[in-house]
Amino acid sequence: MDGTENVFSEGKIAHTIFLFQKDKAPQVIDEFGQLILNTFSDKEISEYQKEGCHVVGMVHCKKEDTPEKQFPKGIYDYWELYEPEKASKSMVHKFLIQYFRYGIIEFQRSGERSLQVEWISKGLRRLINKAKKCNYVPVSGNIFASLLKVLPDDCQTDFRKMVYELSGTSDAISKSKWNSMLGVMKQMLKLFDITISQDIEEFIKWIDEENNEVQDGGKIGKVLPNHYIYTDKETQRIVDIEFGSIHSVKGRTHLATLVLETFLKTHNMKAILKFLCATPPKSVGKNQKRLRCQYVAMTRARALLCLAIPIDFVDDKTQKKLQGIGWNIKIIN
Image 1 (cartoon, helix red, strand yellow):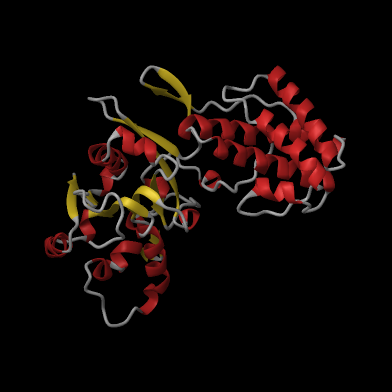
Image 2 (cartoon, rainbow, N blue to C red):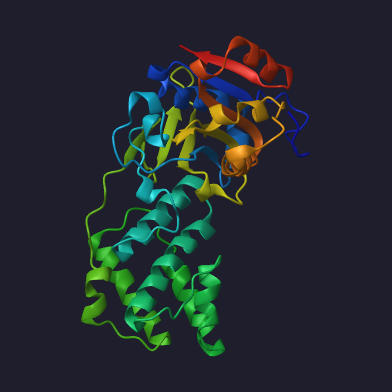
């Protein structure tokens, strides 16, 4: 196992392949959570919270129940609460307040106010584009900067102050608080030559909050969609694990990554197992796409990389080959 040099390079990181009986697939997630806690201190997990710990798979949208021969087919076969439509942070929400609520959850989780501003900026972009009835503020990697760019120079300071005021909320938004925030936004919209109209009344209205609470050491906290909080029952230490498709994490860096076996015409890692053993066949054949996806998935981790494969796919001889190139093998049965 070779990787890039970083602060974790000198540590004894146990890059692990979880080999599981198919009826134990959900247990893989908890094993990964425990391995994270065994590998990193709370300080390290907190320091790299923005990068996070992730579970990814090539197939993540469920179109039908999984036939036995195709199991495990997608991420949903490991964690039944997975919601593919919410796997991307670029997802479109129906109501403006949802962007603000997700921003608060991100801030509570990471302590990064910039992540809260990012969510608010996404919501404001949709609000402005709805009001303008065009793509007035284009999508970009920095929505806040895009919003500033369409404003005259003499309006930018006022806009910054208003966003700062809107991002000062770090607790649940009450209905009265939302009405107060809308007052700020109405003033903000004037900077863009926009007034509130019936076209956007539905988008900006108050809605009740979704019930996505988690108990954490006696404290109640909010959890973003497709996040699972693993808790060590003995120590009560916790780690936040995020689920998503391989495509959704392209270009990102994680503290730890678990890549799940999934099925698309055939099982992904089973089809490229010789490559994983560092004994590739002479011809790539039909596996070019699988190899590209696997490369993306396996190069996200800064420190800990794990794979999850049904034990039926990996015989004793192959297990020894994998151990010989540095993998730790964990059997789940």
